[in-house]
Image 1 (cartoon, rainbow, N blue to C red):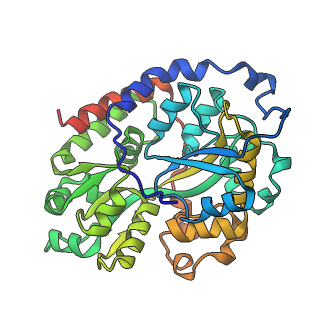
Image 2: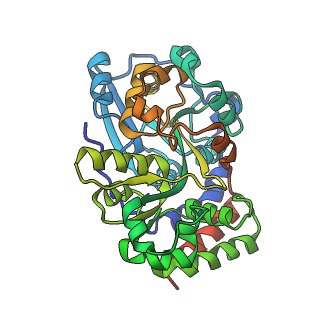
Amino acid sequence: MNVSNKKRLFGLVAAVVVGMMAASCTDKASDNTSGSASAPAQAVAEEKVLNIYNWSDYIAPDTIANFEKETGIKVQYDVFDSNEILHAKLIAKNTGYDIVVPGSNWAKLQIDGGLFQKLDKTKLPNWKNLDEGILKKMAELDPGNTYLVDWMWSYNTVGINVDKVKAALGDTPMPDNAWDLVFNPTYTSKLKPCGITFLDTPADVFQAALHYLGKPIYTGTPDDYQAAFDLLMKVRPDIKKFNSGGQIDDLASGNTCVAYGWAGDFNLARKRSIENKAEQNIEALIPKTGGLLFMDTMAITADAKHPDNAHKFIDYVMRPEVAAANTNEVTYLTPNKAATAFIDDEIKNNKSIFLSDEDIAKLVPPGVEDAKTKRNMTRLYTKFKSGV
């Protein structure tokens, strides 16, 4: 299955989402608090169908086909490129999907809103393969690891085309802090001709700007967001594109030279550039002040029509060989500790994927903004993106 179909437009969805968020997340489904959120017993066998909604470019090309062949379950696999888009579908109910893959911070909001079913771990024998450290991190947002299984994890950072950046900077040396390349006008003004791209999501952009300013990235203080907005507006004239789904191809083809986004995407761009003989020297940088950790998670929707099939798929991708194949393809790190033996040496030796203990310690952990903060952040982001 080809999952490279991306380039979904974010547009104005985020503004709509946060406007509905407060109401949706306090309107908890009654079965979530009563304990009946667990998948109900099936009176009859489920039809051989499974509907999955995942991020673009986030699975090995044969994972779905192999699962279908082994189980006889037909998979409908759709993709998105922002948490805001996924959240809009979830709060509208009747999603049509059995498995979704939200970022862990958004998943916390969705758990509280009664949007997921509890996992039945008796149906997940491969749970034993998961890394205890990742499970503990997940448990901070999902106590008891009740609803979520980590799909893959990485961090937000800066990705560059090394040769193009050095050429654009000329006599200006590379900054000591990689974040300067996207937040300091001294650098962005020089890099503008070769192309700078930003993720097209309010939370990702403002969290990075707040981190760069030395402020808590989940602060609820309006003045902090105003300071981040003022910083962003200084570099706005130098940003070529806002794109959450196309940074891989833009970097791999040499159409851009700097991107603020996901480290896994930058390593995937490097991989594709090599495969396509494009000869673009792509690198995911590790900022001295740390990147922003994120974990993308599998969850079974509250309205899933095929929860048993969903458990079968979740257990399937927790097999070490399957998890390793996904990491080898997309260069994001699996939470499956048993998969390490099957991961390619090139990936295991890549210090921007298999981070050192020192770099891991610097990663800023994920958290959750409240609804009021999200509304303010989205309002400011809309102004920033429009440049007014």
